Length: 142
Image (tube, rainbow, N blue to C red):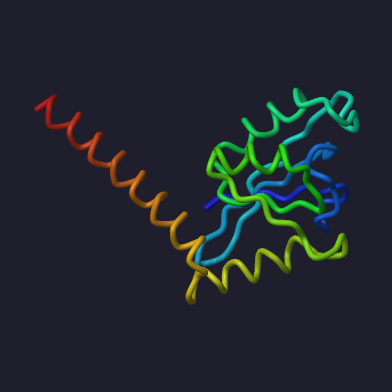
């Protein structure tokens, strides 16, 4: 699953979702985690009430399961949830991305909480549907 972190230093979860200029994305599995990319945003990001600034962020995170933030507004959180992206607020801006990634790997290896199991089941079903579609298409060509 893909997990995103709002960060200003690429080490800590220390950026407000709406104001974040960078969001780091990782792929996380029971076997470990791998950095995928940094999504960068420009423009006037601190302008409160400017809902337009959220659109490119939410679209850029469309294939993520979770986004960790230091803070997030209610409107942004609701929009993420509607896109099936779970926003999680860090306990403090001192929380390190590597620590959270390590805990996620351990959680996936063990017994994930019900909300995460549900998300993982949905992802698995979506992959199964894609596989069936691809198999069906290849049968048509024979």
